[in-house]
Amino acid sequence: MDTPLERNTPDDARPGSAPPTLRAHVVRMLRADILAGKYKPGDRLNESQIARELNISRIPVREALSQLQEQGLVVNRERRGMFVMDLGAEEVLQISSLRIILETEAIKLARSRMTPEIRAQLESLMEQMEAWNGTLLDAAALDLEFHRTIWRATGNPYLERALNTLMVPLFAHRTLEHVSQEIRRWRLSHHRALLDVLAGLSDADPQEALLTHLRMSYTDPERYSTLAKTLSAPTAKPDGQI
Amino acid sequence: MDTPLERNTPDDARPGSAPPTLRAHVVRMLRADILAGKYKPGDRLNESQIARELNISRIPVREALSQLQEQGLVVNRERRGMFVMDLGAEEVLQISSLRIILETEAIKLARSRMTPEIRAQLESLMEQMEAWNGTLLDAAALDLEFHRTIWRATGNPYLERALNTLMVPLFAHRTLEHVSQEIRRWRLSHHRALLDVLAGLSDADPQEALLTHLRMSYTDPERYSTLAKTLSAPTAKPDGQI
DNA sequence: GGCCAATATGATGTATACAAAATACAGGCA
DNA sequence: TGCCTGTATTTTGTATACATCATATTGGCC
Image (cartoon, rainbow over all chains, first blue to last red; front, side, top):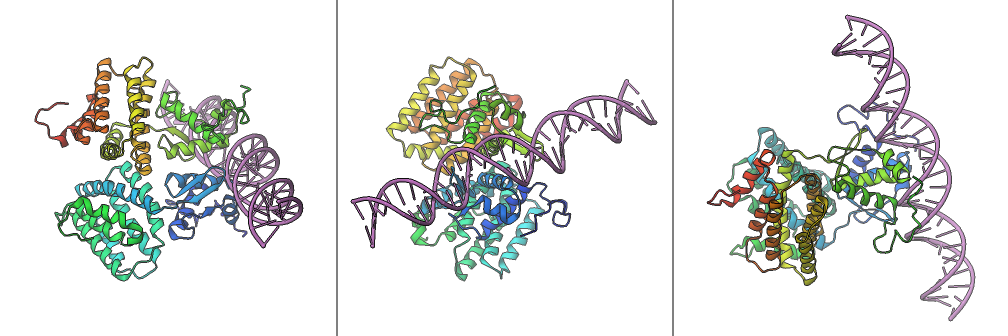
């Protein structure tokens, strides 16, 4: 309660990743907290309280929240405060339909610009996911980082930004879902398939690979039945596999 | 210099469209100014100066600028200030390639959800454009509003937001371009073609209609030759029309 | 006992003030 | 004369203080 986040501390603020401004620091912190589930969708983010906890004034907190709004993680209700973005079933559907379009393009671009470095990063993330043994949050973080690496590899920062704004709230939303070991294995296999497409090891249609991957992600019929249908429809598979 | 933007003024703040907060007011104002060319791409936006001009404190101005960043109109260089988003040729290319994908989807969705109200709005905007007699800025504003109406009509707020973030800076960029009367007429005819597609009066492929429209928009070979090629390529037209 | 209203509390929105960093400018030196 | 350096100014970043609005609580009334 008496550790006022000294900004002249070279240890915490090691060069290269040092947040030179308090706002940037708070952005990182809140972002991590939201993705880690400390703040759940719909929760209110109290400026004063956060400022007190960090022993700083409200101003940098306000600006950090404003910046998180840009990333789609929080929403501002006028004179009511900031709230962690809460997604209903319809919103998940709307975002996902966009995701299919944008991430299909991202995969095509990333494949055409694949470098050994990027591929090594993806392989490394795959291995970490396959060897996963930790918490659900870690797993979600790895999954997200896998996709973000793909988005970065497109070389189109605007595509990257659009996908981030769309998908990061969705991941925050899904962080709280518990999935079975079986589904986890399925997801892994489809990540591997995606990686094969990206590495040029597979000639499968990128969109088809992505759709297969996505079908894995929304298996709760209660909430995502409409999306499941949407995902199945455009492929026009003879067999009606989910 | 002595008109401190009274927030208790019911006349300016007429119900329904009243900015209940200074920040919202400044956002509107700056947004309009940037789109109108008062601030040009690359210009620095001085907090103190803007605050002085409006006779308010810097805080709402800072927050407004932060919010404009969310909309992609300005960028923040740490401890250097806010600058109007400046787009180079490559960035225009990257944005446009995304635009094709997203707006094609938007047109499809809007067509499938078209209502008499929306159609009337589009018709009205078309008429205003056809009867246009004002400044270049007005023309650009009408053009943008036409497209934004389409985006709203998709019913997918995330698609709408993505297109706004991508395209509004692009329009701000192009506001300064002077075009000939001939090109204006061409653009009008293609807007009309788009409207026919949207209204279901034409069975033309939405993407093709959009591509035709876009080719009209980037006719400066010096700056957009690469984009022109990109736009031409996927259609695989036998004749090498621009 | 339950519903509505007036008050109390606490939140956001904004203003002012100060600190630190960046830029502009002037002077010294080669 | 041209470049570098040290100072001055300007600007952003943050803190504190106050005003306004939203929410919670309590009291009264039906």
